[in-house]
Image (cartoon, rainbow, N blue to C red; front, top):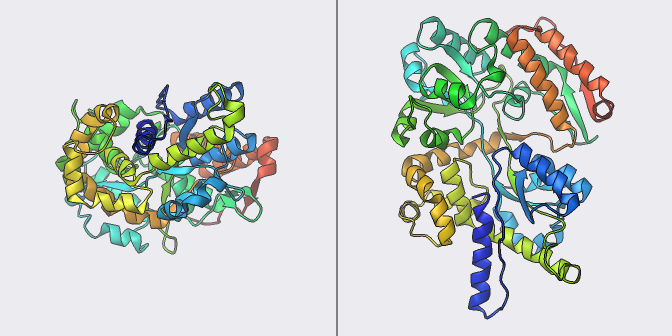
Length: 466
């Protein structure tokens, strides 16, 4: 629906015009889906100056500062003022993510939470009560020291190969939850600079190092393959804990990760519990992390039309109307349930609780363009059911605890350094102390980072884990 939401939005506007005798039509001439959002961003970045980029661009909010600074995306602040009721229906944190220097550059398309998943059958064998776990995590009573204890118990007693599995390859965004969970921060709003919070980063790296030294997480975790290693290990019950995303819930039902087949909704519900990302230690707070995707508009939207110079302002206003309609509650709710992302609008969240609407969607008895219906038919058949809708309802509270990665142009470079540091401590190539020194040195050696990153605090003395 990141592609077909635009198609459907245009169709709905055309229908309104037709009903009112307005002889204007919006035609979507080309659609493109790129599975890597980093690749999609780099493609837009290179093609926009050449006039070759699409009129609409949906991607992570983290790219807004760079694209806004370059003048590549449209400032929609003034347009949005006429749609206050619509803007108010979005969750405020998500609208904030679409802003840069007080101006609005997009509308939220989706968001997510990143729970800690727990394998229920393994937990039962070792005496871990998953029914009370979410509240204990929420209250800060169950911390990462407890995660370590139970992961080690499950491994030592032979019920799993690993205690914990997490994402590969990148420290952004899942793993930076450790920084927030240990009471740290990544950005200083007063200075506008990124923050290297040394105590929190050290504790994060120590946890990774300790898990790997005790054989509870693979030393080469950052190089594991998603389809061949990570997801099969999780769904086959070879790990007690997994740091994942809400979208896993649906992905396990769509991809053949489990001995050559996908899971049923009933199996996912039976096998997996989920909680907030626990506090680092007593006194800290549980967290989650969201990375909202955003509808953005090319600042040259409509440029391929012959009267662009004359009608540029009208084309831009029409482009804004398209993302307004692409944000209709039912479109957002459909995207939410078929992708296991959280709804970005309150009205969309209401639809997910409406069993009648869910049943109509299941039968495809909904007002959608025939092309859109055809392209989502199979995934609707597999994912639209009360179990998945209930899951989304159950995890929606996590947005109260969510954090966002800094929307700062230099943050991706800092995240890359974190990635290297995590990989080195997991493999045992560096101690946590050496890894922190490595991060500091890399920041200082980069002229752009050294100007944009504040290094605060020092490695805590006599800190132990677990």
